[in-house]
Length: 119
Image (cartoon, rainbow, N blue to C red; front, side, top):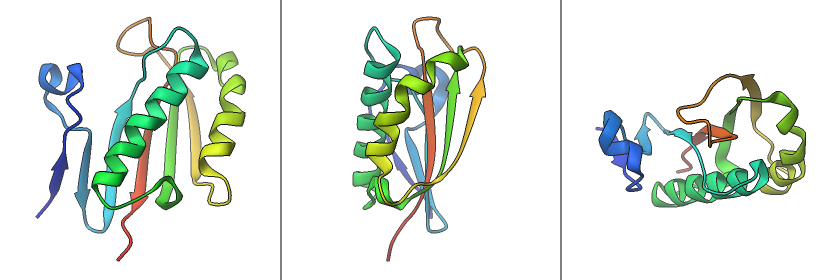
């Protein structure tokens, strides 16, 4: 049976989804945006929300095996590289960056991950 994790984000109720689903030995974390004025502030905030969902599922960022980054302006991805490198450190996941529109123009980055649940 799948476990559903909710973070209480405003879009969860509006759209009808949860922050993460634990199923089949994996944790699938929904696309996550963060608050802040800059792409780096939003990146850090999104990663913190993701880390919280992973913790609730018994995982850490070291368990992430796949990450997708969505940005409305690909030029804003490079300022996030140091943050992402620091976050994933010695256990970097497979990654994809996609340039696209996000749900609201105020958002500069959305991050989606899949983690392997240890144990």
